Length: 179
Image (tube, rainbow, N blue to C red; front, top):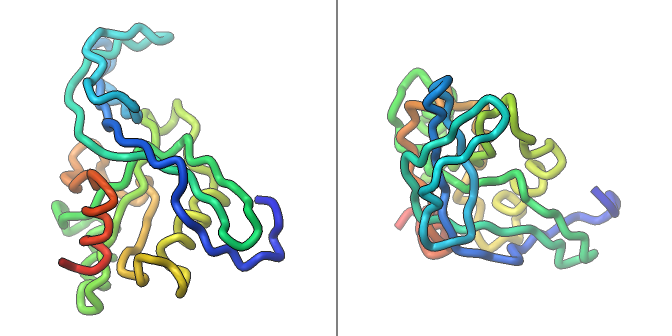
């Protein structure tokens, strides 16, 4: 990331409403996820290399990029599909263990969901994930450190995860404040 001497204070920019779209390959049974800026899910099947993706489900969400208010550096979060709030669906999952540990402090845990299949798609690089974490954990941020962000690779079984998709900025704000 540019301008490492800056103590970044990030803001969300380029906020776009859309959908998290899940598709399943009828050939190998793998699941795909992506962000779609449309209000209607793409229902048509897609052939991609050895995969034959068929629409499974979608959920409303939003996408954004980050910009430092101090130095103007922009971070494009193209690899981020959406944020999901941990609901504690698997007590053996690392994310739920962290959620229970933070619960006394009223902190919520959100999962940064990337494109799937994880081993076939470009994932959010560490420096971009760090900027995302800073958005929520910098003392001057608008979320008042009420949210801890974790990468989806911490989820024990992402195919069985029942985390709640964060639908919009209002929901994100209420998660941060615990209301």
